[in-house]
Image 1 (spheres, rainbow, N blue to C red):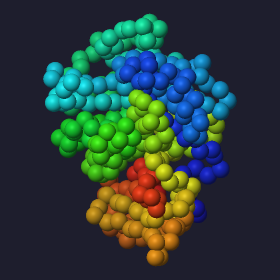
Image 2 (tube, rainbow, N blue to C red; image 1 turned 120 degrees about the vertical axis):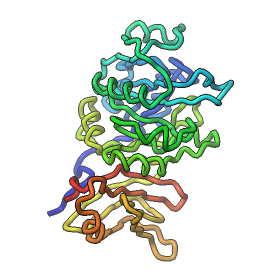
Image 3 (tube, rainbow, N blue to C red; image 1 turned 120 degrees about the horizontal axis):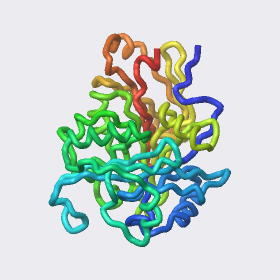
Image 4 (tube, helix red, strand yellow; image 1 turned 90 degrees about the vertical axis):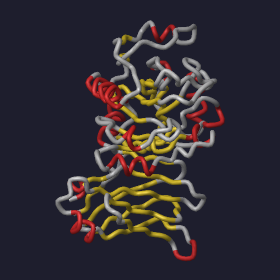
Length: 337
């Protein structure tokens, strides 16, 4: 019997899940951002302005969906960009499961003419906000309770390492790639961070996003979401199921499992890599540099060796001839067999 790890016969929607507009420190208005992203083939956009939650239903149309979101940070007292980057910080994106959910855990840092109309609609608690694992986990737990999906943003730019992220719990996703920070000189391609975090939570998804502040970063990274319809409920449900993948180039068309043989189809690739929780990986590449569009893997050995391991998983990275990549979340043993 064939099992589809990515849904068959549904729609793929290109999504930007980390953007900033003039509501905070972006250079483009929400309407200008929609126009730019729609011109690049996007169907979904979350405006995650700093420290102010905002819904933009006026930008919805039959071919474009706005998600309600916000980016929040918790930092030490000596963190004050752009003047100083010596302090420590966590950054998280919250995506509301309901479009009219305008809760945030603490007040905006400043209220000005650009964000005042949104601040007047938002409602917040006065939660503690310090840079610690304990505070971050309280924040994540409360955000989950209030109806949000929580994304851990750009750990490389944040200067974080094992001790800062290994104890985070309750996240929906890790930002695997951040266009803005890669263009700034930070290597925010966080595959190693994802592998580390999977040792503690193999249900963590991955996204890729632009972190747009200026037009030149628009369209560098995206998240593909597979949903039956372009509606708020359908898209959020697909995200919760993990029917997504992250990309800065290649497309993944299908992933199917039949008996112990797994088949992945994609756009032209130089290599498809299957990675596991152990030091065990399988690679499929074309001969003499010929691109491939189909990769097959026999999971028999991995299945036998991993039997009984609660952290057992597989995940895929598709690398295009130009070096760009697409990456899936981890698929757990209990999802596969």
